[in-house]
Length: 114
Image (tube, rainbow, N blue to C red; front, side):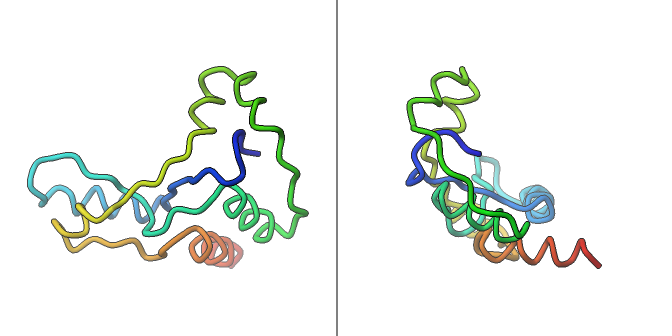
């Protein structure tokens, strides 16, 4: 369960896409690049996709103020973050295979079940 507001955003990336981005960045001009899916999702969407993929019930969210009880980890996880990967995609041929966790997680779980 993620602390914070269910409407907060989270940017994610699969391990395979992150690894491919690192390799692609080796040929990119020097600089800082964000590596993320194309479409950030809300905490509620993220948890919903995860629960659906695991065929589990959707968890209830704790009140946002409980993030403070988790110390620095709670404050970090409760932030709303919308990363953009446009700069990396413009500088390289890299792009994530899945636009968001909504497509990527179910596909990864199906592939790992084989």
